[in-house]
Figure (cartoon, rainbow, N blue to C red):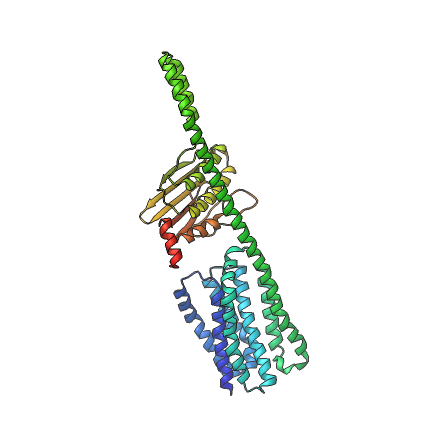
Length: 436
């Protein structure tokens, strides 16, 4: 009957990999990730199953951390997009959940199945797909969002899950299998009950952080919309007021010229030109995107920065996402320039249409000690004014338009490059409605 035991072990090892791969973020494509996982982990699985057949569960239970856990940890650390607390928490959680199923089915089979391994086989056959269904149905999507949104707190949670894994492994196998130590079963069962309760507490804490992140994102979007609409309204009011005043200006100039007061007419015309110069500049045809530029160009002028602009786009734009990208990018540039000496404050914005894409480049002077490689993540320095804050929003907005964001430092400048699709709003809405 050991065949049921060996098959159940093989089944468990495969499903440990499946459970973890559902929850972690690889830095490679899905196809390449599966290929690398098969190449690296298949020998590990074969070795451990062979060791179980040759040496038995007692021996393999004591060394499986070295023969299975450590090799898989090193491999997945290599292919993972996250290399710190998020990765270790996900790895330890998947391993601990799998180990929990393994030891529970082992104890049930020992006391109720008379070590025929039938109950062990059936239990693992059912529980692993069940926990994976639950993970796909309820956990995977918010958990991936958590990994993207929450940056802090993962180290503490990773330490807790690692301790649980070690505690469960030690209690199950040392100094001998738990089934040979009936006097310790009560404390063992308490640990088994406490573990899912602890995980529940951890996920509640993380989910609250996710809700807070979503709230902050919504408030930021609403604030950006409010600023854009206010700037647009103010600009329109100034235009209407100027049109209304033009009749008076024309009548006054006509009167001065008719009376032969050329000098007075020229002086009056200079005053009209000065007042018209105060009217907000038109950067592009789209009123919402133009309002963002009007707002931030005024802010730049307030700190003595003449920000150069080269805007070559039309009116039909996905303005919601573009306003987010521009607002956060220009806000980062403003914060960075505010912290520099006045003579070092330089900035520029380019926005161009190229076939099916809009290309955006925001460039500004930055601190001399700031070095960012292209493609690396920029960390927020909350003790000072610099880049990092809002770049996540830029990346998310670009992704919604099937685009990408890159930032890097070059010749003393911080450069933010964004490329997004330029499909019209009507086409985009049609695609969303059709679910394509």
